[in-house]
Structures are given as structure tokens and as C-alpha cells.
Length: 235
Image (cartoon, rainbow, N blue to C red; front, side, top):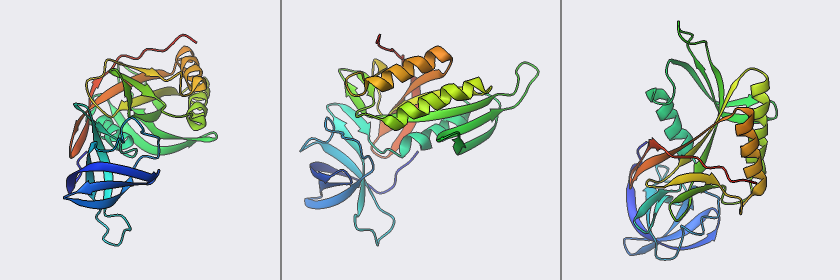
């Protein structure tokens, strides 16, 4: 996916979770933060950031904060990006072959999954009906990608619903889109939410497919890149 009108700047402060003060071309601009997570390890005063100029001139904020440099690593922190790049990746056929239908935001039970996917029936394979949940990952520590960065009751609920869908004949996948490159592996964060870790382990035991993918990140683009090993902690 491509961003337009990107400008470089320096992060100054985050008065609340929706906005940030960023210095761009020597002026302080108020930017919309497209990630309501804590992001404390990313948004450090003086950090180099990149913001996209808003298309709507009537907006109260002229820019959206898109990415931030953490050391030598560029991290995309746009929480809307993982679903968009995953849709592009699905359409490329690199994750699944013979896809004939992709339906975003599909209701199932008391949840709404990010994607419902169907594949064609072939002489070698039966038709597949798959629910997918996508989680964006921006937290990294010593080369390890972690999720979540804060407790997520919604995330636990989605995992439980994916397990339930297996019992009704669907396939179930959870995909962690790591919004950066050069990580060693992915693991759920026990420190931030033990219940999510337990639910993810239960999902794997039940047959939910767990995948982690890193991304090529530039100042104005984000692209799904390579699979990353998944390590589940012993609880």
C-alpha cells in the first residue's frame, strides 16, 4: 500500500491518544494518530516520524501520523494498515491459492471477523471456507515482535469465536502483521495480557492456524514480506 504527501518531522508530544504534536519544516503541527494503542516505546520526544498530508482540507488536523523510527528500524504505526496490506497479500495469491471470494468484515456469532475467504474446489483440493482475524503488531523488544501492547478483551473474544467456527466446519486463521522488518520471531506478550496468551495457545491446540508476517516499510509504503517464526510461551 502507498501513502501520498508524506512529510518528515520530529515527534514532540502526545496530549491524548488521538493527536500528536510534530515538528514539520520548523513548525509545530497537530497530527491525527492512527493508532490508539500506548506506543510508549515508539513515540519518544525527538523521534523521527513521517506523516501523511490529509486530503480533506476541512479537517481539524492537517496530517496523519504514519510511521516512526526506532533506532535503525522504521515502524509503521497505522492501525488501519494491517487489514489493507493483508487484503493486497490475499489477492496476490501468495498466502492461499485458488481464492474465489474475499469478504471483509464478516459477522459470525457475536463477533465480526476481518475476513471470510473461500477457495475454489479443484481436482486436488476441496473447497475451503475460512475465517481470518488480522492483528497489527508494533511492539518490539530486542528483535522480538510482541502482541498485545495492552490488554485486549476483544482479542480474546475473537480467538474463542475462531475456535467455535472450527467446530462448525470452517477453517480459522489468525494473522499477526508485524509492521516492521528484521525481527527474530513473534510471541504473545504474557506481561501485557496473560489471558490473550492462554487463548492463543488454546486456539492453536484446537486447530486455528497462527501465522506471523513481517513487512517491508518505507516512508511512503507498507508491503507484506516474509513469514516470521511464532513461539508460544509455556503458561
